[in-house]
Image 1 (tube, rainbow, N blue to C red):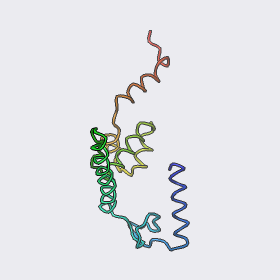
Image 2 (cartoon, rainbow, N blue to C red):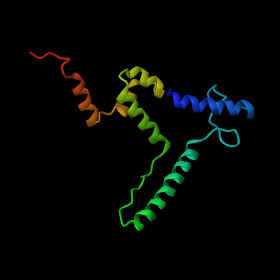
Image 3 (cartoon, rainbow, N blue to C red):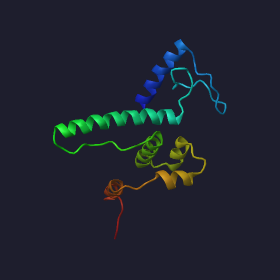
Image 4 (cartoon, rainbow, N blue to C red):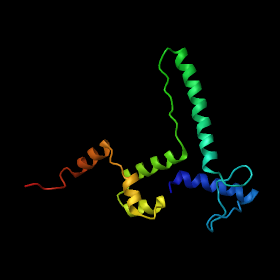
Amino acid sequence: MLNEVYSALIELKKNQMKNGYCMVDIDGYNGFVLTNKDGGLFLPHTINRFIRRIYTEYNAEEMKKAKEEHREPIIIPHFSCHHLRHTFATRFCENETNIKVIQEIMGHSDISTTMNIYAEATEQKKKEVFSNLEGKMKIS
C-alpha cells in the first residue's frame, strides 16, 4: 500500500475509533474503514453515481468556459470505479515485474486473469524495456 493511502486510512480509522466501527460482515471480514454516512458500506453503484456527478459538473463548467473562450472544451469521458481499478492494475503491471505479487494484490484466483486483462504492453513501456536492455546483452 502506498504511504499516502495508508496515512489517509489511518486518519479514517482514528475517526471510527471515536464514532464506532462498521459492523457489516462480508465473507468473514468486518470493521471496514470506508463507510457511508450511516456507517454502512459503499456499493459500487453509489460510488459510480458520485463519480458521474463529479465529471458531469466539471464538463458543464468546462463547456461554458470553452464557449466564452471560443475554444473546444476538454471533456472528461464517462468512467466508473472499475475503470479506476483497471488503470491502477495496468500502471502496477508497468512498474512491477513479479506477476505473482500483482495477482495476489489484485485478488485474482487465476494468474491468467492478471496476465490477459491487466498486463498490457504500451508502446512507451516497450521502448523503455528495450532501452533498459541496451548494453546488458552481448550480441556477437
